Length: 585
Image 1: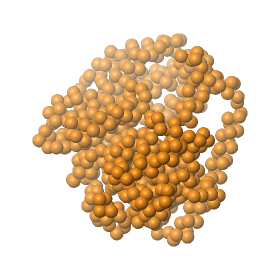
Image 2: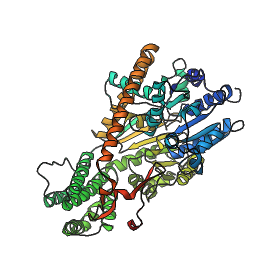
Image 3: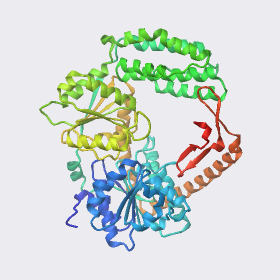
Image 4: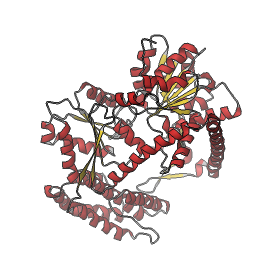
């Protein structure tokens, strides 16, 4: 196919797929997995009678991206292609769409709904599909929708029902599933292989070419000392202690250290307990403590003023119902002026911010064409960092033009799909040169080569780390971890490096297995998975039948009054739970 060439390492990894085998292509981010999949799809369409290719993605924005960037340019002149997501009208007659098209690119949920929907215009059988391509296939585990689709496949396979589509999975890292030792990591990767009914393939003969085409960034740990004094944080902790004393903590409950993720987990459980026991004092205090803890976490990562504003915004919308609310709002407003004063003292500002500033200034200069992504944990932190960049004279002088990129969805803090697309388009054109992003930019998005990737205040697994570092694709690019000396971010990053290595060893061990042993293990895992699914399903049915819908009462979280019954909640399109009672509004 002279009009469509692959690199030699890509040709190596697609060989078994071209022979009709089920495989998972394992290549690093930027290694051209999608291009290899398009190549396989093209050959499949040319050589298979009544060929029908379905491409599954796990995020809505990837539907249009794969359609416009990869599949349409190479296949559109000869074949009928269609892109379907939850916002497309085609989802309502998806069965017909599949019948009339050669290639369908859709979210996994659309296909799963079609497999389980008996309505003729919406229904699809796996036997209708001849090649099923699964993007970011490491998500095919547990209760993910990918695994639900493949669960249907595996059940049919074990029963000998066919025909079934050929499977092609794509991943930059199957991960270790939290395993720290080789045998357990092997078990995890084998489970992914079993779920996808596929062998895992990587480049062996042409690894040097892959290294040349997809260079790894230079990794640096930009470490800061702990700030010697933190009067703002200390004042927040003192206020939290007053709430602890007021709420009369149950004797069997212990809260861990303030300002940590563990403390947040504790107060979430405490709030749920308060709601369950109809103890509004406990529930409200826990809710407010979570806000204070959130402010401490922001204070640890961002500016003190960002932490102050997060509390200010919360209390600006808090309503008072009883004495508990009067105490909690009273405590805040009595201390609000002092908190604002402390947050404004530059001497006590977070040292991580100045380290982040110097890291950015090393790469950005008006005379140099730089492009970077700054990864942060939450939508709130991305907005705070964006505000900081806009108001920092040195960063502006360096020519940084930043924008926020977060997940699509509803609500003030979410971006629409078109906003996401505009931001990425402007980044690609160079109108923007720094994306301040949540994990949405780590995986799958078609973002151009960057010469700087910064991870800031993040604790994630090895898969997310590899996806993020893979965004720094330019020659001699830098991957920076800005963190406190001896902090959890550095420890996590080093653990992830070990886990990344472990993943490679686990895959190598699986690839060295004899075909007979591999197939035996896969069939055993698949049989166990089908049994477990059936047991889980029967338990779910038992739980559902335990209470009649009418007997379930849904209460307002704030005032504990009845707002709806279980029979008011209906499932729409197999996805959305909606309260249909007109009195609810």
